[in-house]
Image (cartoon, rainbow, N blue to C red; front, side, top):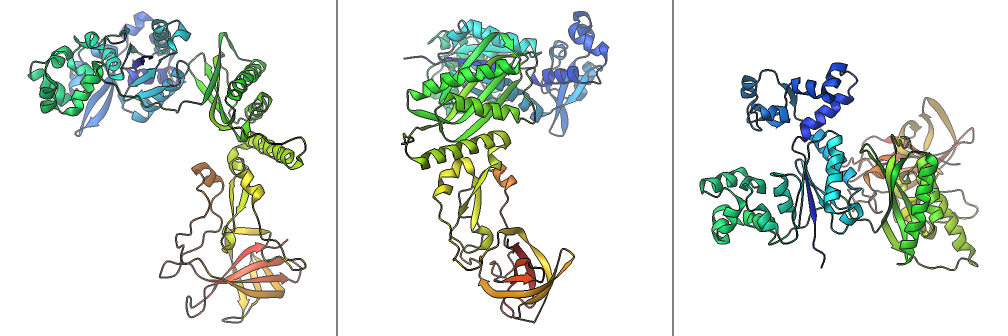
Length: 559
């Protein structure tokens, strides 16, 4: 049985480290200040930095740097007291969103070591390095490489490795660089102060009052005593820290089905080298999936820059992909169409290709069945268009079982619904008869001013977009009542995602105007003006029952 190994990463100065990095990147920073960050002599002369947040209607320190800590400042100290201790301090407002984004960016970068990275708020990460430490020369080499890179980026880091997250987390709060062998968690943390467990302050103070100053002191007492005084949740935390029980981490991203990657001793930066790397990884990925009869539906290429920046490029396919050439072509299309081009900076030292979603490949007769070959070509075209302009912009229309005109069809992403669109059955036009529905529908219907015999006469003329239209021929009315059993006017199709809804909002929402919450009845007319243009217009409501006066709308134009 492989024992789990967890690397805990703690960045105790994350807010102030982030602020320093932002100041160094700021164009308004003077050269003397820049020099102070790199010169040891001037570094000692700079003012301490603190971050303050409002707590109980008072500004208190929520984070500080090493210089502030050396002069006696601490988290929780009121700002007024801090200024009394050291009037010359740099004060910054807390920005939890910016701190969270920085932590997420660091977590993205940590994906180069393991795909199982979890956030450990407010300033920590947990990495499940089980089975992958040997790729970096062992656990010690992995931890040194990770911490060294973050230190060069300007972050204060503390790290530890143990068999459980609670044990590794406790070690990072007291000593940096500890590696605990399997089953030795209890002895490794016995001498640590109780605050390193990360329990509530009230519990920590209660343990100290009871004379239990170290984790070993607490562990020596009976579990029932601890649970009765401090609760079962603290007892569970203690057992996890001692290695007597465990709890899974919650990775930020699900583990991909298949992963292949390539590391470079010398970073690559040219388009040709990047394309060749992706092509090679695609062939390796296809070979791995082929052994299990799988094909890729969603692929992600992750580019890790030497300066810590991470770029993720994703493509989706309508059908499971089983050819490396297809993957290579899709990524070429995607990279060529990027609005924000892939910037290698000083180069990429790691490129990873993942099959995030896969499906079982169903074998089909392709040599003699021309329909299958045609469908393959259409699916390939849809995939290439989606890679270039985005999957949410390539749509198919599916019929719906409703007589409401604007909801008779619904746009859906083509990659997910291409097969359904090919099988869809639409109402056929009656031969020799004019079409009942126009080719173009307005969304929403446009209001018009109509001249007609009141109350039931057909329209004689109407004004639309500052243009007067004289009607020569008219047919109707065709009465369409709204669906009284579906007052919410919800679509019958599967719910698309938010991005798709932004690009393709619901067409022609029906106004709710009656007292009982239902929409008004419509009387539609097909009209042709003297210039031969054919319109589809309607009046809203039934006189005397639903309305006392009519509103008219133009809903579409016939071809």
